[in-house]
Length: 542
Image 1 (cartoon, one colour):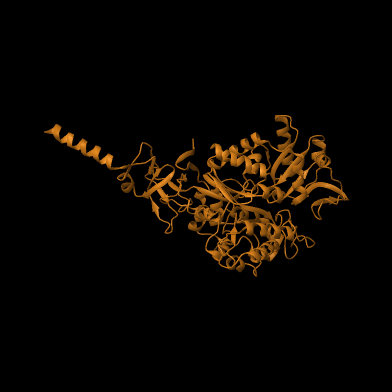
Image 2 (cartoon, rainbow, N blue to C red):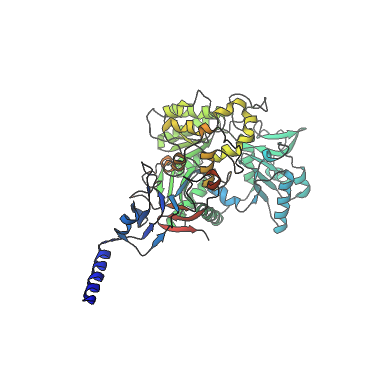
């Protein structure tokens, strides 16, 4: 009799298993934020062929589906894969191979880092990224005397943290072939002393120093992209919008997609120009690559006083900033984009730059449109201009860590205008949504810092204790949406990704703690445990 009962039980178990739908992956026993319309939380997810089949309770999923690949989250928090809405993937890849100057507290410390790098191996060019004179005791631009003394023959090119200024040595200046009074140097873009170059150059002239560097070939570009992808996965990023791409980069990424070499989802923005428009004249998607946006610059950065202001800088009354692209060029490219179905994204820091872009967009965008033209950074907005975002459905794209990086000195630059700066909650109310990103490698790759800055408005030292202009802090739900579903929406991909719902791609980020409920002291300690793209584990913490 006992054998009969056991046989019946076994048959029932086999029948029960056969009745369950087979899937490729089941994740269970988690604290899973779906970021759906009701911001619901579930505990389990089933995945098949890279797509989410169902999300629900453990009982619902385990009683309905079976899989050879079961992952117990042990109560950990899981979110839709983080999506960086504004960054620079080649800048990250190149930066991983350069001298990291971030956090240097003096120019002497920068010199020390350069000397150490040169000792490691001989180089044809000495390159570094990330210096910031606002961190130094004397918050002034350096000169290149020490660079000339220590590196008389090797061109040295060091980019400021915002990549809108460089300090270079005379060897680099000689190689570029410019001299004081050169008509090719736009007004204000060369910092002079006694009629001579100091080695500091801004905006377009700073960019020209890239001309003396050998262009990376296809093999080198691939190496840089794969290094950057690995870094993104390490920090839970499964999707990015990469701002600015020349034709060789478009071609390499397109090829990598065809060959299946790149797993990161990339929304690639084109650097506009005649050659680009001949080759890419309509938006397209291929695999995990989307091409449908052009990127332009209205001005420079606040830290180098290149941001274009309506009134002069509070700490430099003769300076208004720099318009990086002529108005007629911005207009011509915007017209081309409108006629050819592309989005437009314009870098705007100062209030004059934001006004310029808002007025330009209003020329082409009808009220009630869904073209999702974007203003990148939307950093300082004049009170009279804020409502234009909502009136013309213009998307303010923000980078919350800029607020906490800038806040200790930004008030010196703009005075009372600081109240219209980094106004994320006010910007959010214009359309009811907004995307956020890191702007890496200008800021760190880590999107948890984006969330931390958006919600808590303090830096990593928890300064200021009460938070910076907390009336414009985002709620935890808003901040998470900005780096998942709203970031996807900004690239017209909200039906593909951005939430954990049936039919969307199985992109997930697992953390060692729940940032939504954690204290601000705990949030900044959060680490990525696992990253999944299309149900494939692409990163796992050791």
